[in-house]
Structures are given as structure tokens and as C-alpha cells.
Length: 102
Image (cartoon, rainbow, N blue to C red; front, top):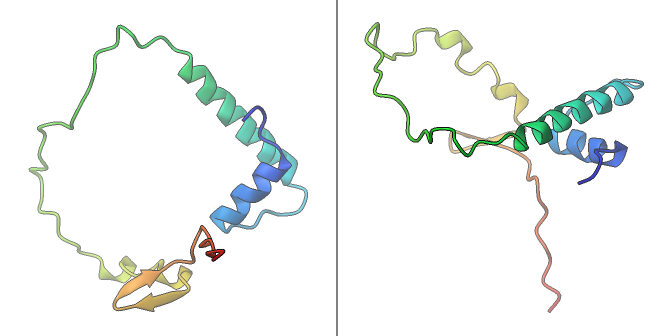
């Protein structure tokens, strides 16, 4: 990918299922180009001598138990989904199935 262009922006917006206000495309496109440029810059950093970090840490949460206390907010975002099946929220497919040509 040489340059992130308006067709890439449209595909990204469609994939994310978001709407952007008219006239904001150029600003968003510029911002995304800056982000991609930054990642390209990071990719060029020499990490040969950097220590390899694997796994997590041995730290434990000792201040409290991990219990859900505020049930009001628990299902707050579920109205953003199109359907629910067997207690699970369904999302629209991102990729379309290819039809067999037999």
C-alpha cells in the first residue's frame, strides 16, 4: 500500500460501519495518513539490541476482588447490535461468502 486514498477511506468507513460528516473526509484522510506514516517510521527503528519481552507480569490485583458492581452499565452497548441469539449478540458479517461455481 503506497498511499492511503479516498477509496481506502471509504472501505474502512464501510467496514467499521461508521458515518462521517460531509466535508470531514479530507481531515480524516490526512489524520490516517499521518498515523500510517508514524507506523512506517516505527517499523524502521532498529530493535536488534532491544530485550525480548514475552508473557505478562507476575503482578496480582491485591486491592479488591474482580466482581461486577454496577449492573446498570453492563448491557449499555447492547442496543448497538442488530440481533441477539441464545443470549449472544450477533454482528453483521464483514466478509461475504463466495458462491460455488459448480
